[in-house]
Image (cartoon, rainbow, N blue to C red; front, top):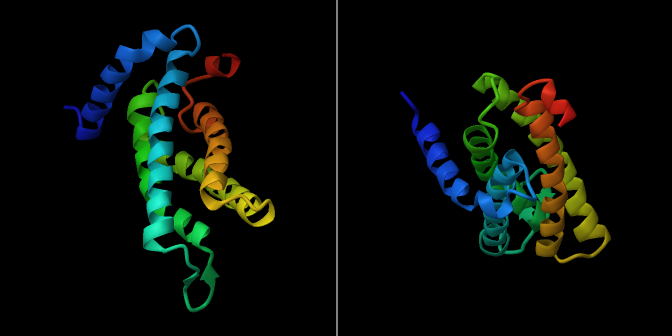
Length: 169
C-alpha cells in the first residue's frame, strides 16, 4: 500500500508529465523534475524568507541573550526547517524515484548535503549582504541560485544515487 507521500508524489509527477514535452529537447527527465520541484521549493523559500524577514523578525536584530543575529540570518534560520522538509520529500518522491537507497540513508545523506548547503548559504549571504552591500532579498535570490546548482549535483551523485551508470551520464 502506498503512503500519502508516495501518492502525492505520483500526483505531482502526473502534473509534471503534462508539461515535459515542452522541455524534452532541452532537459533530461530527471533534470526537468528537479528543476520544477526545486523551483517550487526555491520560490517557497524566497516567499517565506520575505515574510519572516519583514514581518516576523521585522527587519531587526534578533537578540538571543548570549548572542545577536542579523535579521537576514535569523529569517534564513527560521525558514530552513520548512524548506528542508519540503525539499527532501520532493526529491525522494518526485525527482529521484529510481533510487534504491533506503529512506533513512537518503535522509542522512540529504542532511549531510544540506549541511553543505547551509554553510554555503550562510557565507554567501554574509558576502552579498554584508561585504558587497546587496539588499537582503536580492542577496538571498543570488545565494539560493548558487546553492541550487550545488544541491542538484550532490543529490544526483550522492544522496539519491541510482548506480554507477549515472556517473557517466
